[in-house]
Length: 407
DNA sequence: TGAAAACCTCCATT
DNA sequence: AAATGGAGGTTTT
Image (cartoon, rainbow, N blue to C red; front, side, top):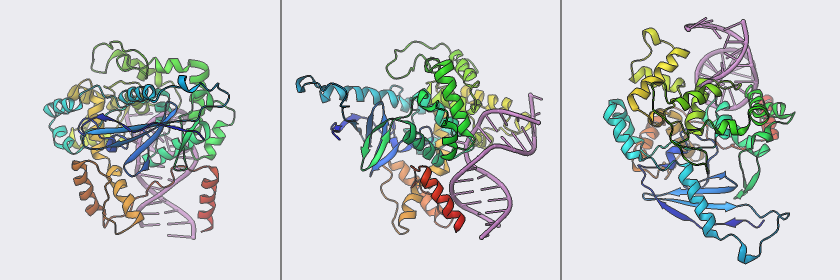
């Protein structure tokens, strides 16, 4: 296969503005994989994007699929130059990582208005909200109900493996783009996804794919985007003023998403925040609910349990406290509290070699400290499942099952 | 409007 | 070895 591998380029970035090692694993995206030591890769916009980060640069590289033989091969002189592709990839990265907002400044602002944020955030700098594709976010978060990050990632990878276009390989690992809605409208999708272990979410996904692709249209979904923060390649427009319940466009997007099967308030908020660019969206899951009870005096009186009314009250409280980018601040605290986050990193090295000390998973001084604490703490507790099997297909699922039954 | 149970699976824990 | 409960929820009673 004649792959076109662009060379590594770099973009100046500080770890307080962007820390990919945290951002790519805090549960907002599910497709990034480690392709090598300290290297993250994912298929995105018809290329495999690979990233590395050091103290002052984000290094990136794109691998493009072989030119299809049915297409006319341009003569060498007309072939697109590496440089012009590089420009596109840079623009893609700036878009995807949402690099325009000044994160350091935002952290300062949130710390100034919230003592709890000030206390917890310093160990989790560089957490940015990604601008993911709206459709991908929708399906990814439909998968997230009653579920954990590790399994969600496995499910999403499986979805791509079976329904998404193959872009290329890295070290024999296939990289598929996320399937478009039409790819998930076939008559057997639900049953197949069921077999792949999606559970009751299989029906939600099949239904949602039909409604989006045949009824409402993908454009409907993408038009729910924050106009200040549109899908890749779309022009920016002003988005109006912040109200208590969020801007008008955010409220509308949230409400319209609720019409889809498998989409409740929390999933709708995740899509708004991670896929539609609505920064004031604050998804309140059980974890955020714990934080609200522990640190923000919720959980008593009127709001003693997480009802629909409590959900809104919590989200509004955080919007009042943190302002327009409340969803960003929320993700910092969420990440700071994510046990799976530090556990998984430690577990990975522990499972493979009991004796090996924490390797250089961290490229971040601050995070290193956290990991060390976690290591010592975890030592006598237990081991966590590592995510060896991101890519399971039906056969593997079946064989694991039968194995277990026989055992 | 508010609880509670059901929904699928995987996994860790008894 | 088999049973139980929880996991970053939504839908239906």
